[in-house]
Each structure stands twice: as structure tokens, then as C-alpha cells.
Length: 547
Ligand code: C2E
Ligand code: SIN
Ligand code: SIN
Ligand code: FE
Ligand code: FE
Image (cartoon, rainbow, N blue to C red):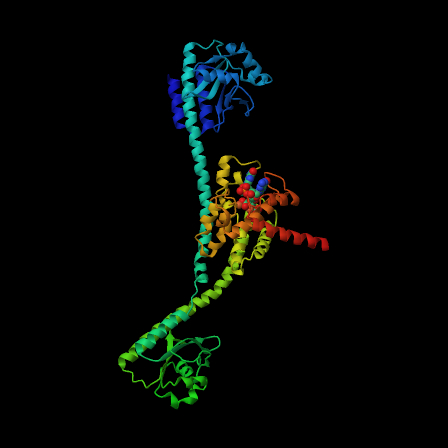
């Protein structure tokens, strides 16, 4: 009874399976003075029993008893102990052990005790002679049986626990890896905003001019901006003009009325332009506009000239204080807006450098992935080249090409989330492993979709395993529901994959791969893409012959 308690205590506190089984075996053999004992268990839902622990014996740690072995059949029948002498007279039992004499001898079992959990055989104890050489009493057998049952339950719990642990560990690892990638990617997200947002000064300036002409009741207005590099004012937006007179205005500081306003940083007011012909010689066509009144207001922000706002009216202007105040408010706000926008412009320029750095990063990732995926050197580049050629043949525009290329480069970025033991497995994948492997497009989508810069590029990583006939993954997309980029890339991927060495198979020849691709037109691949691919192949062959 004491032993039962100790065993069950052990069972509930020890979680590591090896440790648990060894302790139980130790406890039993010590208490009952048994010289040899072993424990066989089921693993991973398999039906065979495998040796888990042994004391006083030395069988191979890979010893397995097949699930259809008569010994196991007999044990699973009931909840009773089997003795060796009983079994020795059984013809089936003996023929099943044929050729495994060694194992039986080493086990030296006197009795076999089933581990039964809810009517299912989950393992077996074997016990050799007791040191006293006395046969096992029926009381002892009963004790061993109930111990075996407890052990069965404890072992199952431990197995369940460790499976859950392992799954949890793998999931955590995957998440950690993804998170790291995400972090790196989202750092680039901000940069990207500035690149893609088109900060165009024209639109806000037109709005301003609309306000100016309407609120101030004047016929026309324009905005000239100051180009610091060339120290010139140039025309950006105008409203209310009947001719293109001012469109091409470029004034040095000090030149013309606007140039004066900029130079003096003061508003210039002309009552009658007709008397100021000389100042407007830069724009001779302006005379056709018949303007009379003129205001040139410098746009100043942070003490620096940003441009000049010009106001024209075809009759004399007699502005009051309110009018002047409003004009000043509008211009100072505009000056600030212009200054901000200019700052963005400068930023944009430096972002171009960042984009270049970014592209290099992408290539770096692709290379890292190649290494892990045991891809051959330059594989990404080859895949990229063929993708580009096919896309060009299929009329993909230059604008879209860049996304396509980034996508091709990153097509298997999602494999970063696949554990090594699956990605590098040397044999075929099990159902469970496939389930994980098929997530690589989804992992990619998770990573890339939050980055505007790569959103369009994500089409390939996300959809490159979809098939034309709808049997692909992850979304079973069909036909033209699959983005063209992904349809193109799917062929390139397979063409290259088949001819590459993989942990799970040898490379195919070009002929084999070509035949496979033809066979898959209309099934895996878009027939139009296969046709374009054929044209490229024909062209290549002709080129080869010429050389
Ligand atoms: P991968 O090896 O680069 O293969 C890319 C795609 O090429 C495959 O997508 C499949 O459409 C095609 N492909 C590659 N090898 C073969 C082949 O031997 N026969 C045929 N008929 N098609 C082939 P799929 O099947 O969705 O596989 C995606 C990725 O999953 C593979 O990329 C590879 O990393 C992995 N994988 C696929 N099968 C196995 C396998 O049996 N064992 C292991 N360890 N990994 C596998
Ligand atoms: C690769 O191993 O790089 C290609 C496999 C895939 O596209 O899933
Ligand atoms: C890659 O992993 O870089 C390309 C894989 C392929 O298309 O087979
Ligand atoms: Fe893939
Ligand atoms: Fe691939």
C-alpha cells in the first residue's frame, strides 16, 4: 500500500516521461525485490509498443513489439497478468518471437502485466524472477495490475502534456520569428508613407488662390515659389488669368515686381500697372490682361522667403484695413504650409536613398532564406529573371513590374515561420507537417500586408501556391481570380524547384520538368502563361544553336 502511494505520488508530480517511467520501475523492483523489469509504451498514437525503460536488462532501446503480436493480443483481451510458462505453450506466441530469441532472453520475463487505460492497451510491464525465486502470489499479481493501471494513466497524462508543451513551444518560436520580421518591416513602414504620399503643393495653392480671389474680391492671383538652389521665383499656380502670360515666369530676386517683394521682404502695392510697364517686361503678354491694380506679398516663414503671392485686378483697388488684415493672414498661413511641404520634399529626396537601401535589404532576406531552404546559389536571381521575362511577354507594365520583382524575391519569405524540422526534412511530409508548410503563404501575407510599400508585392508570396483549377492553397482561388503576378510566378517556382536538388528528392532534368509543365497547363498553370513560357524556351534553344 505504501508503495502504491509512493508510485502515485511520483506519477502526479513528475512530468518528464523518461524520469517518470524509470522511477516507477525502480520503486517496484526495489520494493518487491525483482531482478529484471521493463516497461513498453505506445508512442505518438502509433499502435506498436516500444521499450521505454528497463532495469536489470539490456535490450536495444529501439526494441518494438508489433501491435498484432499474439502477446499484445492476449494482454489486451483482459486485465489479467500473463505468466511466461503459460505463454511458452502457445504456438502463435512462439512463432511470433521467432528470430527474436535474444530479446526474450534478455527480458527474462516471468510475468507480463498490461497497462490498460479505458479498455485500451497503452503499454506493458515485464517482470523477471524475484530474488527469492518464489513465484508471484495472486496478491502480488493484483498489486502489479493496479500499479500498471495507475502507471498507464500517469504516462498518458505525461504524454499529452509533453505533446501540448511541444506544440506550444513550436508555436511560440514561430511567433517570435514572425514578430522579429514584423518589427523590422514596420520600421520601414513610416519611410514608405512619405514615399508614396504625393505631397503636391499645387493643390493647396489652388485652394489658397480660390480663397484669395473670392474673399478679397479680386480678378486674378498667382503664387510664385522660391527655389533656394537657383535663387529664383517660379510660377506654381494661378487663377483668374485669361492668358498663359505668367505661366513661364522665372524671376531672379530683385527682378520685376515679385522679385522686388522677395528682395525687400515687403508687400509691393501698385495702383496703376499701366504706368509701370517697365517692371513687367518679363511678361509682355500680361498687357493683354488689362490689369490695373497689383499687390505682391512675400511669403515668409521662419524668417525666410518661401515665395510671393501676386494679386491682380482689372479696376482700381481701394483696400481697407480688414482687407489688408485678411490678406496678411492668408499669406502667413500659406507661407507656413509651403515651408512644411518643402521640408517634405527634401525628405522625399533622402527617402530615395532609403528605398535603395531597402531593396538591398529585401535581397538580403531572399539570400538568407535560400541558405535555410538549402537553395542553390543564385536561385532567387534566376527565378527573378525568368519571372521578369515572362511578365514582359504577358504585357505587365513597368509600374507593376517592380512589385512583381519584389514579390518574386520574397515569394517564400513565409518559410521563415516554418520550423527547421519540417523545412529541412529529408522525407515526405506527414499530414500535420503539410498543414504547417501550407501556412507559409499566410505567414508571408501577415508580414507584408501591413507595409504599404510591399502590399502589392505580397500577391506573389500570398498566392504562389494557388492553382488554375482551384485545387491550390491557401484560398483555393481559381483561374483569373488568382492575381496575374502569382499565376506567372507559380510556373517559374515549379520550373525552378523541380530542377533543383531538394532534401526530399533529386533534381529533375529539363526535359522532365518541361513535360510536367505542359502536362499541368490548365490544371496547375494558366495556359496563357505556359504558352508564353514555351515561346521563351524556343527562343533560348534557337539562341543556343546559333552559338
Ligand atoms: P519547393 O520544393 O520549392 O517546391 C515548390 C513547388 O514546386 C511545390 O509546391 C510543387 O508545386 C512543385 N514541386 C516541387 N517538387 C516537386 C516534385 O517533386 N513533384 C511535383 N509534382 N511538384 C514539385 P508545394 O507542393 O506546395 O510545396 C511547397 C514547399 O513545401 C516546397 O517548396 C518544399 O519546401 C516543401 N515540400 C513539398 N513537398 C515536400 C516533401 O515531400 N518533403 C519536404 N521535406 N518538403 C516538401
Ligand atoms: C522554394 O523552396 O524556394 C520554393 C518553394 C515554394 O515556393 O514553396
Ligand atoms: C527561393 O526560395 O528563393 C525560390 C524558391 C523556388 O522558387 O523554388
Ligand atoms: Fe512557396
Ligand atoms: Fe519557392
